[in-house]
Amino acid sequence: MKSISICTVAAALFAAGPALALPYTGTFATDASSVVQIILPGANGAPDQGGVMFKGVSKTTDSSGKNDSAPYTCISWLTPGQATATSGVCNGGNSAGDTWSALIVCAANPGADPTKPNQCWGALRGTGGALKGKTGQFSQFGTGAGGTTQGAWN
Picture 1 (cartoon, rainbow, N blue to C red):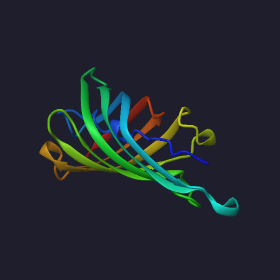
Picture 2 (picture 1 turned 45 degrees about the vertical axis):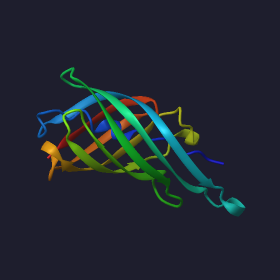
Picture 3 (picture 1 turned 135 degrees about the horizontal axis):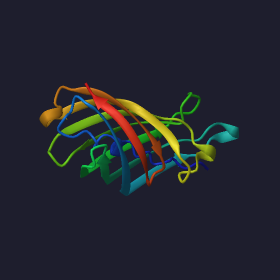
């Protein structure tokens, strides 16, 4: 049975500080809590199907050295027969009160091992505060515990 790697894509989005139109880079460390995973093993060699919901708090440091910490909630699912390993959606915000939603896609990591790095990318939609009505994109490389990120709000 395969486990779904908790893709900490939500963490990638907190690095956007007050200069929202500028690109950002940073690092993140995520403590995912309230993890609920449901997997249906594939019958007769078919791919497993299932999903995971998780909440947590992301900690980021942007390229200027500014630290931020904020909550997020994500749902991701296996995408059997597709070119990517998992897809998902996240809602979150930052310490300034700005809120966002994200559509996420993650490539397969070696052996679907959550301790090995994977690549995720996606689209951002600002839903509140200074981000309301804005769009953006991001990518990140890391494990469920942390990694590096870059992106930009348009």
